[in-house]
Amino acid sequence: MTATTGAVTPQGTSQGTATCAAGDKVIGGGVEAANNNWVVGASYPATTTDNPQAWIGVANRLPGNNNQQASTVYALCVTP
Image (cartoon, rainbow, N blue to C red):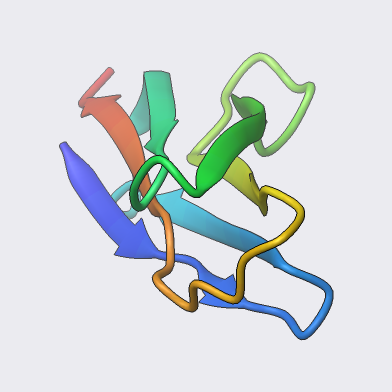
């Protein structure tokens, strides 16, 4: 498994891409919202090919707060 932290934009979105090691294939993934001021907006493989190598996750900050904590994106990787 690999993980990365998504950067927070001024608009209140945190997006990141967790990438597998060279030659590995992503078989799943997810995004963890930083806290209860955030909601998961999207979570999907980074490509539509038969051999995706990364996972994209997006979290959106709820209206009415200025929380700057970022989300964490995870990719579950295997060696084919």
